[in-house]
Image (cartoon, rainbow, N blue to C red; front, side, top):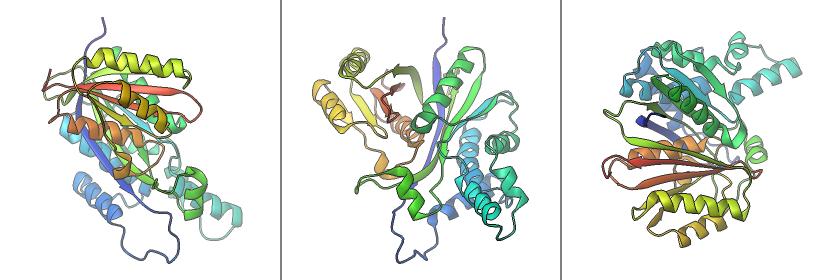
Length: 313
């Protein structure tokens, strides 16, 4: 029998930004300062040789780890759609053009597992340690792997999604293809999965994966939500690339549904789902009911992630 899985210590750090390139913004980046201050407080140092991506990951992950009091055997699962793109872009430019001096730390920081290694070292964790990159579903795959390990006997898993802003306005526009009202963003959002109910924020109910986004799949998704929610309120969070028409249909056909919009808070980026789920878990402490997050790969695959507030059940 699969054990019940609970969610502890959700942390959601996010920041939307604009595509404006002229005139250049000379104001200090408040989000950068917040990240630096958080790392300084959590680590007792600024991690000067670490890249911005690593500091962003550490700020969220270590905050989450300290709130949950993780045992040393805990695993770390970091999801990212774009990785340490600032270090990668700088390294490529320097080696390709032959201008400037290549930093040896860029070679280290651009490695996919450097961020997870840094988190595990700073938090004193010796369990499984993975970086997962699967585009718009990177966080969902990390969550899926962590759940598999928990069901297999791992006591705690620290799971998060991290992506930083693109290095140039041109790169942001090329990568995101957003509509006018959709602001690109960045963030570091984390939560802890465990079989321990004490101090838990919510109970994790599972994930449902749909091979396509055809009408029949959306009907099954709707029926599944309706069955679990019953007469309770269904709090619905729609992630990246989820068709607006599908969301509207769900709201119309599912009773007691409340749409929770989180992308306006963190902006649009590949692992924004981590922010949505973490923020939703935080809010579920004061609001009972069933919570559901819907993600879409952009190529047809849809993932439904479900949890419920413990206070109202």
